[in-house]
Amino acid sequence: MTTDSNISVAPTWERPSAETLAAFERHSVANLGDGMERLDIVDAGISPIWPGAKIVGSALTVLTVAGDNKAVIEALDHIQPGDVLIINAGGYEGRAILGDNLAQRFDLFGATGAIVDGVVRDRDIIESLNFPVFARGLTPAGPFKNGPGRIGVPVALGGVVVSPGDIIVADSDGVIVIPPSRVAEALAGADAIVELEAAKDAEVVELRASREVSR
Image 1 (tube, rainbow, N blue to C red):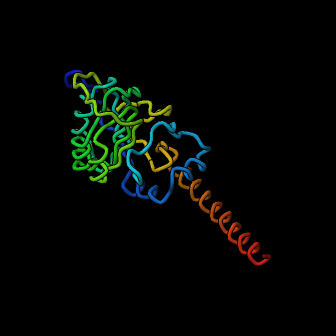
Image 2: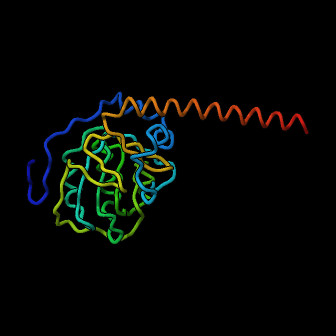
């Protein structure tokens, strides 16, 4: 692990392929969760800050002090296309960990989104950028930039452990974490749930038709 100032950075970790990430884009968080025993789902306090936001990406993890974003800024140097910033800010709601300026930079460097166990600001501008951000809420209060922090280490996110390189899927329902070792299982499970849901929807269509005929 290398150290720059009081921000430590883990050695390079393995990221999932672009093809693997693309395979998850067709599935909702709810179906993935049902297909994975309904585990590894982040708590409901973390949600999209603008409607319709969706993320599929590889976890670039950041651990920072509550109300401080020095480590988040340092993480810009480590973004690779397809990464999603996973930021443990201690769930602190007193200061925003990121705003529109960092969101623009994340987007520019190829990140697919940011998920913060804490709060953010500049929602309207971030929405206009179409950059997906999930958080516990909003505050106009800006962060300190003192550190310390860690990048590329396992972190907690809404009650779930996230390791660098884990696959993250987030949509209007919430966030799920998929370890690389469970990729095949998660995709197969979600595919099965999609088939089951389609069968249930067909039953409803048939039931509705039969009730209309009997009227």
